[in-house]
Image 1: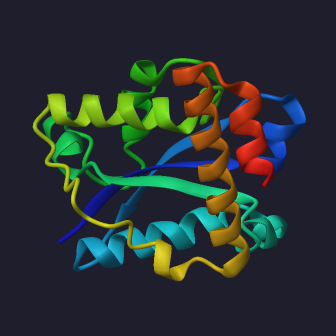
Image 2: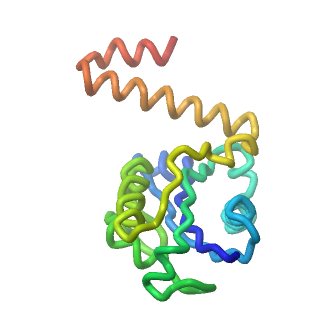
Length: 173
């Protein structure tokens, strides 16, 4: 059964260089038999799109934040198939569009907006599914994810309690 997969990835080096998050939102059509196979194929597609910089993906400097099965959404909009640019249908909902597939927005906000758009059109989202990419991540990737989670935790504490010094100290320790 074919699938239309949309995805969000971020080159952490690029985001750091411009001092703001920069997401790449795109789509991939897969002829895979199962959703798990389609997601794995899309992961390889994203890695392959990096050309000579695949090592950044392997080292965890390029993070594939999320992949969605957007097949139902694509069918409703008569865009189910190869080269149908389903991502361009969703792009206006995301906002902060720079050019091509690039959005200057944080991953959490992008994910929330894409979820809302897909759900609005009846696309089922399996919220209980553990990200199948996690077991396939290398140690440096897992360490980077852990570092980002700690940073987000500290920022959340600072927002909630105004304890900037306390939360930064917590992360540094």
